[in-house]
Image (cartoon, rainbow, N blue to C red; front, side, top):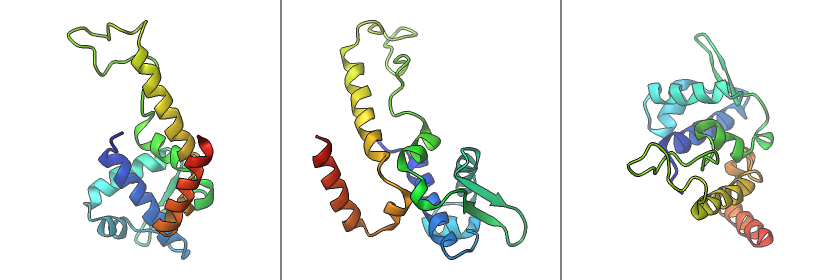
Length: 154
């Protein structure tokens, strides 16, 4: 799986909002962009996507900014990733590799598609167990937790 820039930076911007607003402040666009070393325009684009998916709210004005619409422990990684990019693998049809045709020649008998769908389901099942609050914890604690969960799921 390849993580897109939109997924990576969108999640990072959301984590910045969670960190800053945990102090009962609004997260300014400039603070978020500066913390992630991205342009304010790019941060604004990502936060607009997250706002449209009801993950953050924006407050206009001189002392405006962004805040989470729910507590970090109620926002799961699967929802964030789907908000930023959709499904990892589209199940309707495989439009990505049609060869010289307009649609895949294996559409009715694809043995590979079931693998990608299964991998996507496993990954999203893991993402459904990870909250923004978890991601705000120290990396080594989350890593131990994830290893334990992976062992339990297989």
